[in-house]
Image (cartoon, rainbow, N blue to C red; front, side, top):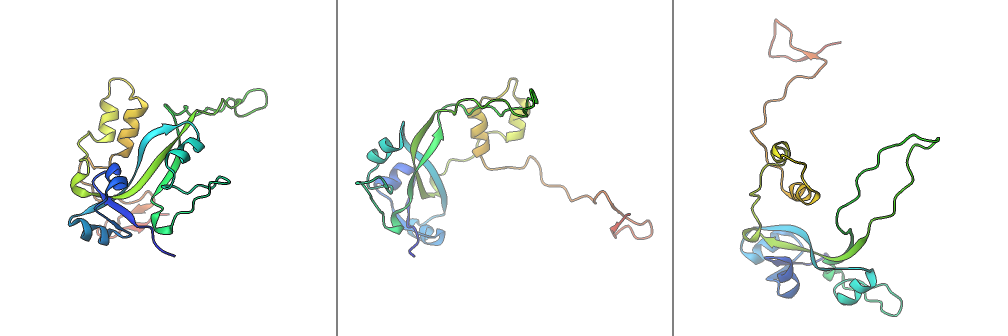
Length: 189
């Protein structure tokens, strides 16, 4: 089986239109680009109301299994796919109700979904957006009002950065240091 040859480009649009090269592994992509690369998957293009509309708009880029329109891509060209996403704000979690002998309330209608093209590619490290936003925990604590879902999603996508260096690990709950040898940690029963 052949590996997928992912495009090497500065952004998703360039990955579809004119990639620098195509590579299966990070080492090959970095050599072709002449710099470090990062593997990413990004949604591109407008949302489509149905899978059929998305397949028609991106014919030849994704596999099509509809009768009469079957398109099978070579294994190395499978770097695009269609993904179904919730449009707008996702529904809040449901709390158990424990009423009338039922633990959970009646389910609400499913949220509206859309289809988008997702492109996986090797992005140039120089084109990567620096994480210049605040640290997630600090941003949530300092917010005067609750953050909206878009701000929380943006915080969730940023890489984790420590506020301060990690402290040395403490001993466990059922461990103790004997007074005659404080450099030893022994189990306490």
